Image 1 (tube, one colour):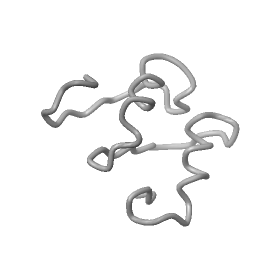
Image 2 (cartoon, helix red, strand yellow):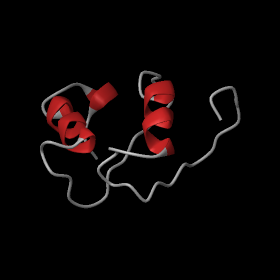
Image 3 (cartoon, one colour):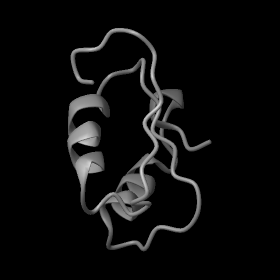
Length: 66
């Protein structure tokens, strides 16, 4: 998926982003402004998802929380 230029949606069962393929997808795609990462539901503050959410709070549109 990293080399794929067409739009796609990746749905992950790991809401915390701590394990599985979601870790690879995040590392490959999170820095690109054309991509959106959306966490639905609760993430513990110690999890990868929780830390990403904490870093985005109060930031510009490029890293805003929806």
